[in-house]
Length: 63
Image (cartoon, rainbow, N blue to C red; front, side):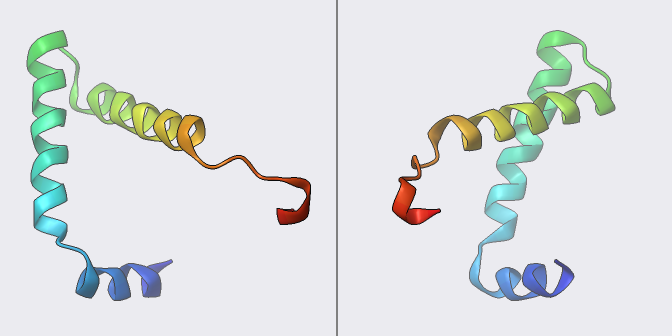
């Protein structure tokens, strides 16, 4: 995992995405009064649901 992250750092504009994540994190705290930990858990859950709900469906041949 660590090696993959190092490779991706060269390809992905990390500051761009980090700034947006930070904005959403701060907004959750301000709008809903969440603690840092709760705001992070909410963002994690949103990301997981978006991934699970929107990934392509596998056919029997792809398995």
